[in-house]
Length: 115
Length: 111
Image (cartoon, rainbow over all chains, first blue to last red; front, top):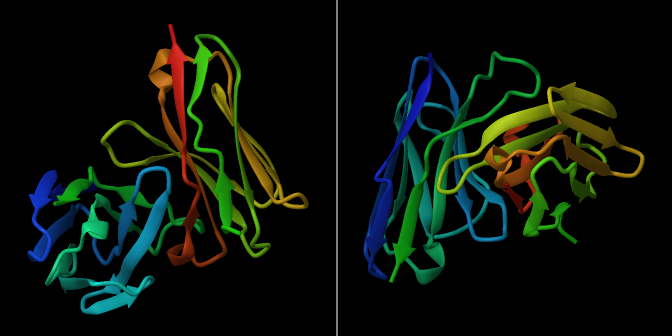
């Protein structure tokens, strides 16, 4: 069966510090991968998605970046965090060979607080 | 206007009540409509999906889509305390990379 991992689970960082969040998927190959941010009362905002190694699409211009160094690894980074980067960050995967609606499976999330 | 509108609640009901959760949307290209359930401090999990207009039933849950009104609903019958969670609607056109989520409605079912 497939599983998705995210770490760390929680993170408290000062403004201006760098960020690296990691997401890995097990039990599947060539998944589509996604990074979302969830702010209180604002739903899920798609930040990045990737259809393959080294292929990253950005949905929202910001000080965040994403990379996919391996097939099942997705990394969210920032060189300098802003207060507005606080939120709940979710990684998700979907099977591009699956059913038409391509169900997205979410990880447990990382709660980031920028102080 | 947001692409997907969902009342964030909170919504509190007694155990056994029928719950109605709703979303409206503006993009007529949306064809796939989903409901996700998210427990506190967890990632969302898919609960129901519907393609185009119509109804779909799964146990105590019924999803309805009215594309003419751009309105979708999730009904929960005989609600249980374990149904207490945030429910997010989501929708997409054919390309799933373009899925849009509502803000989520926080539901509490009191025993």
